[in-house]
Length: 326
Image (cartoon, rainbow, N blue to C red; front, side, top):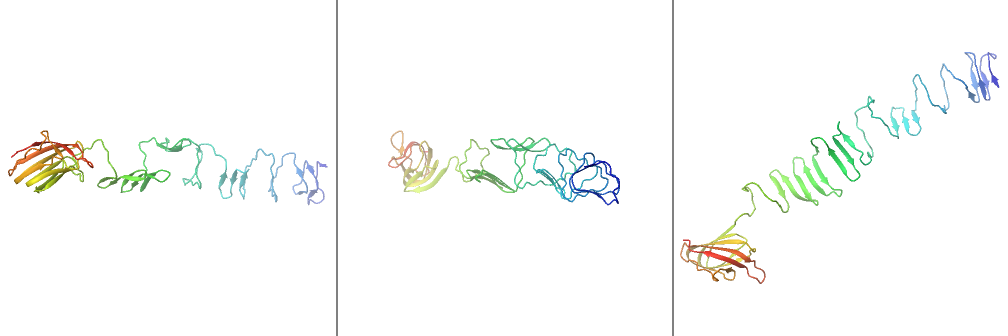
């Protein structure tokens, strides 16, 4: 049924339709239209008052909604499953936001907190600075921190560099020591007075006069003693030996390294007779020289270790003597 023109039907208390109804024109400013079924509008609908819908309003095949005034959504707006505008002003989205953000305004300078992690693909970079002066990235084979400016500063009360097994390479303390490690074992540590090295120091050269060095055996070392009527053993860990002799004495040796050069200086205090043990000392003449016996006489013996002693093998010294320096 199609109604093309309806004026007034009785008192204007309303017009009710029970089935599917097509209405071309409905006149009457006080008319009330009550439809129990489905209403199809084939042309534009203009409503000057308020529209109240108790149920759900469903838009199908809508390509454009033009709202001149304010749209109020009390419980938020949801677009598909990816975008949600909450009633308290938050925006949630699961897709990608593109653009350079140059037109954004009113963005607060607050912290951005990631509850899990920030993931970037290989060669995706975190760049800092106007000219990307600092970048952090993974290039597929290694992790990189690169600075293109003049310097890279790392500030911390304690700085530790270590591998994935927590084995240290370096440890630095604020107002304290800096430590270097080899295989997680500390080898060098700085202190207020210098450095402490654990292990052997190998160097091609040193500078300075070494006047403040302690505990270092360097240069010629001398062993001095006064002997009287005994057999004396020279410790060949020393380079030079000075003996003040009295009475009858025999000189032997212990230790020594092959090729080592040594000197023996003898000074008589009173009448003294000195014999060099021929088991060790070898002279060009085949016999030990006769040393002066007079008080105050001075003799010099120079020798080189030809063979170092071992179990069952005597030390062999190639010697030459200068006597009577008195």
